[in-house]
Image (cartoon, rainbow, N blue to C red):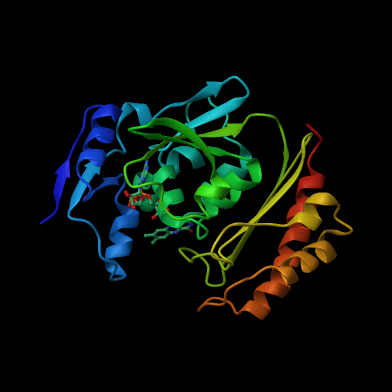
Length: 269
Ligand SMILES: Cc1cc2nc3c(=O)[nH]c(=O)nc-3n(C[C@H](O)[C@H](O)[C@H](O)COP(=O)(O)OP(=O)(O)OC[C@H]3O[C@@H](n4cnc5c(N)ncnc54)[C@H](O)[C@@H]3O)c2cc1C
């Protein structure tokens, strides 16, 4: 039987995680149940963090939108606060699972459990988001691209929030799911074109979220497909039950071309 500790503050949660090496954070529990159903060993001691006020912040801090790690995916898909959730993140959230899952699964749990196999990570990486990590040593900021490439955060650290540049961007989003509703993506592409340049992120195709440097250097609808083909040729992809490496190398450039074209079709910010 698992033990659950319900802290009343972020400080108490961090204290428990650092004093008990066997305890792990628990948010919506969807990722944990999925891991258990797939046969992964899961800890017996949990610290419930999803409902902590400190992880539920939604607001603006200077030029950053702050999205608490305990924000549910439903709240991202259909925000009813005054905070403007970037369209790319709303598109990603809408594509996750089903309404029941979106109502309880959190942004933080999705990023930590999903890593490179997450729709939200594609959006956050394209937007240039950072994770705010809190541990016994204090606060540090880590690019989501790094967090999702290196596995879970340090053992006694929590993700408190994500900080997303608020500057307006033109956005493109493509998600390839072969079997329709509730299907995991075979390749997700997120494109953000802003005044600081272009960022293109791909997830579900490798053991880390990928960026496509040739497309980012010349993000035009006319050249995006060829540039993406060059990029994916040089990157290590994996094959799985959804798509082979050869198929992914062929389909990613098509998705990138569509996403870049969609971004260009938007009015400039
Ligand atoms: C049927 C199904 C369909 C799905 N479809 C999609 C999909 O289409 N696209 C997609 O991207 N995802 C999909 N998912 C994944 C789902 O979105 C994640 O499993 C979910 O968001 C995890 O969030 P959670 O709050 O339930 O995390 P939990 O299960 O509570 O935690 C997951 C992991 O994250 C850690 N953790 C949680 N919060 C924090 C924190 N604040 N700081 C540090 N560590 C933390 C926990 O310790 C644990 O290791 C699907 C899942 C299911 C079951």
